[in-house]
Image (cartoon, rainbow over all chains, first blue to last red):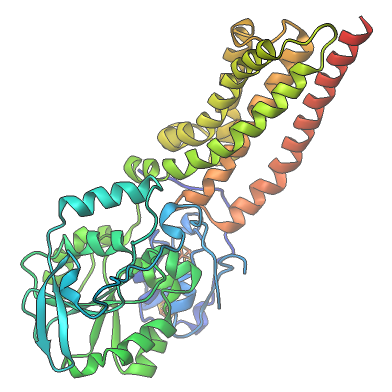
Length: 71
Length: 378
Ligand code: SF4
Ligand code: SF4
């Protein structure tokens, strides 16, 4: 069952030039948003992002930013 | 950085009371889930059972229903499963009893260590969002239990859902240990452990099954139970204001009857949405709620008399406005319990919906007041 929420709302952004290809973002994302392509991360399924922040927190190269809530 | 996930209305997101055995605070064997104590380089640590017992199930039900929210913390620290040695894997988890139970019951026949973090009795996902399942707590706990005196390898396995709270590279930097993210669900752990600590794609995805959706219902119901008396009071006041003699017991009964369609509209916005989520059209929760609400309002006004409402166009219109607003609002509120809605999405929905609901409610109130004035002026 693939529940998807609203289109074009997520604040997720990836800066591919900073990516060092560690693959961690593909491992932590609970909605399989990222895939690897030529040793770089790519956002493959943007609208599935729920802005949990796991990818941004774990990216060692600070290549990902996402606004993951208030407070 | 402290973050808040959108899960904070789920039962497990509220902090629970500590489970301190008052008589023998140091005797691990007093806990029913502890099998025995085990000697390790850091001293005696509890070895736990991998079978949950009747009391655990009973306790779990009580927590879900919100009856006994206390006593659902596990003491943080290191635990053993089976007969682990210095090469055995280390699993990290939260100190919420239900999380601990769902983990240990998947670990029969395993030999490993479990490092329980102090997440204030909150499950991994919510604790990661609230900042208690965190880089700092993990580093602190690794040092406190002297983990590196127990193991000779360098890997610790974290639940994937803890990732929003932990920066793996920070943990390596401060402890020299490597974080490996395990599967989302504990039931996949045996497969993960047998697969050289590699999770397959299917282990990485979070689901929102009917069962998940229904577990949040008791909490939603609690909210409903708080709202109903308020609605009843409003209906009661509304019914009191009428020309002629006032019969309190009649007004009471009438208001109770009036309340029924309202209770149903709230139930639809919570239980209805939860159960039917994938089958209701629209991605927006407010829109899903609006649809259910309109369907119910149509039915409710068709049986206006049954619910003891006056047969009057103004009241019919007001009821349609109120009933759909309530369902829509309840549905929007349910986003707080899902595992796939984003904060930006919810904010966007609120931006559209809240003003609409406010206008509909005011309009409804206008109609009701007009109706009353007409009653009094004949
Ligand atoms: S976590 Fe960061 S560095 Fe690693 S693959 Fe993803 S984007 Fe690239
Ligand atoms: S914020 Fe969460 S859901 Fe969105 S891409 Fe990152 S890990 Fe995936």
